Length: 232
Image 1 (cartoon, rainbow, N blue to C red):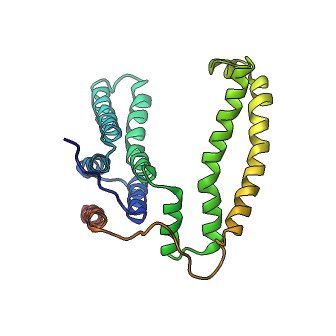
Image 2 (cartoon, one colour):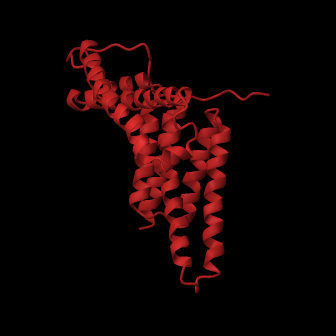
């Protein structure tokens, strides 16, 4: 039986990222950290990406277990270094999970429409629009360059890119930089031609609105924030 997938508004996803960033900057009790990671895992499951959510959840408990096992051998001089890696990655994991949840199954046009609904100033919206579309285009250019290199028998394996740095710079880095400049100019021109800087009312094919699941998510984040403030 296939469970129905629940879709979330980009604005509630953005609130999730902001809360995850807040949890990274300020210390949270361990039990609240578990609650937040469990909430993120649940969001992946209900949105149809349960495999990705379970992988993140298992990684979290692996980091927790690794830190606890290292605590038993804390008298060794090298143990604090590995303990720092486990704790640091565990602290960063909720932010990574929130970013992965926000970008999962959310189109760039939906993000732009959501930011327009929040009346984000155009001098911020236009660079963000170019930035959102820049990296996917850059990745596609990199893949095209790699395919062309493999077709010509140049640096067929990934390891050869590291063993021949000058060749990598000549065949990959320089073309990517040249392509990045042209891509940024094209995307900026496309954003202006489509009237993104027009101060009038903008329309969108995406009918974004906050639904029940969005209010439930933001309420859960609010309760976590209030619970953290009470424990100060």
